[in-house]
Length: 283
Ligand SMILES: C[S@@+](CC[C@H](N)C(=O)[O-])C[C@H]1O[C@@H](n2cnc3c(N)ncnc32)[C@H](O)[C@@H]1O
Image (cartoon, rainbow, N blue to C red; front, side, top):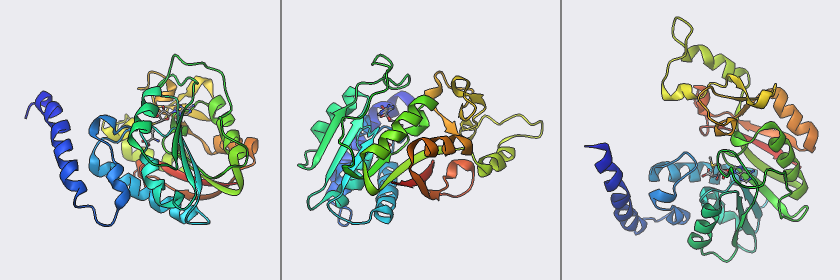
């Protein structure tokens, strides 16, 4: 079928499918909140992939939350609310979910879509060259009270922050977490497993294949940093950023957060819990 025709048919089929499928949801109430294709962003387009990723992160949240209900969760770079779906069971009985993002239209969508009393969304008016290039480029604290959150989440956000932003906003995680609170942050973590995966991606002449998987080769320094890297294809480094173990040490030393768990991602050509690496931190 022609690409153009599929482009037109997919949103229609998606709408019909979701309205029928919703009636068949029996044991996973929160996936009723998966939006239509136009609003499925964050590098994940398919309905099935959203449901899959929402489920993975529901499990990760469950494993890392001390109490299973009444949690106050802050989701940085919430996009169109994927982790709002994963969080729903854990904010019940008196907790809250707050999504924060630099894209105004995503926040407007979330405010319309998540008509839930304990949910709120904040447009954060700072720039990111990839997502909000015209906003103010200064670093600003989040409009969130000190020590008010049980958990901070950031799915595919530190993979779009340069060194300066990454360090500053990592300190913000520390500031807003309660003592003992956890943060779930995904990275392209350029550790030993990443370096071991590189030969699998190159052909005999040592040149990299141009398959989709090989998009994730972090060869160029992001703004000259020794520890924040970007692939050669990016227009702005913020299109995709990976950090070295030394970079992670810099984040930890500057924030006082402790790294307590690491779920390696399958982007490094070995089976993983998720595509990116998931790192869990504790205050
Ligand atoms: C790849 S998307 C992920 C969205 C969402 N977490 C998901 O997985 O569907 C990255 C998100 O981070 C947001 N973002 C980028 N820089 C940010 C910043 N400094 N503060 C808050 N959000 C930011 C972008 O606007 C975008 O929505």
